[in-house]
Image (tube, rainbow, N blue to C red; front, side, top):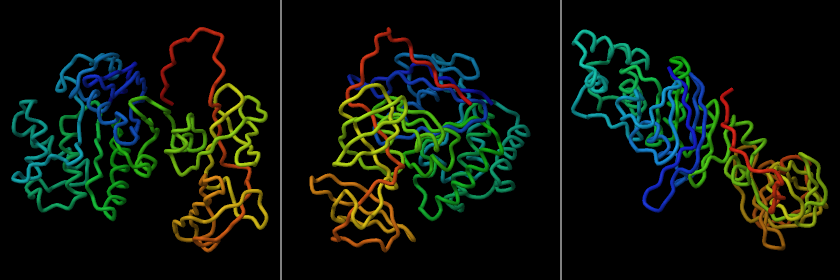
Length: 363
């Protein structure tokens, strides 16, 4: 089991930069999710760690060992691919043993390692079973056992649940979380699903256009987003243009759509600001300061999310009881005093020289 340290990684394909100056520390036994939209660079970053792609700039350290220029086999990373890449004509044991081909083990040792890996994923005794006779969740565990059989330093998971049915995905996600925790192996997971990242990961590295926007726990990304992109991507949020009326180091009074919002502010500067509102930043009121019309309603059981179109064309989302309003209703809104975040549009440039960005540290 190893720690993972990425130092200022960069990767280009032709003239396109897909990973840009990414630095990241992952502690031994930690599970970190690489989260982001399509094209954010998360899969490329995973392939750089695995050694399937070469690094243009930066270093990759596994437990303090520089593996940047080493081939994939020499890095001892276990990889589970999106579509598992199992061989349908081979048994479960043969599929798991395939990951040991490069180790030249004697037959008894090979069989023992296969049995050990299958036991670790709760599939003990299924060596002779046809892999096609297994459920989707069981096939996912066979792929995981194959990755674990060589006793890797790090486990790499590339969208491992994306091809499962939604009904199966939730249960398999719970099984995967318990399994990785029990084994205690350092794990890097690629996903574009927020729910999956929040459920599985100790920390989340949110990527956008090849850059690391923020690294932190699910709670910190939601409650203390570092950028407007993080605030908009994690959870639900509405974005408005505003003006900073007053501020201190952490909080500001921001005026937008004719209302003063008490917001958590990130960055130096005054004047124009980007205001991001969570659905709980607004509530329906009989005579609130904001008027609008319900344009859309998303039912979520006892509660619902209402998209409200304002007279100036802006839209804001409001969380309320599912029977609070219906599409087409004219409504009034008021601030709740929570769920507002702001960023100055034009931060004041620092008078001090720029120093290298410190590497995010593992807890």
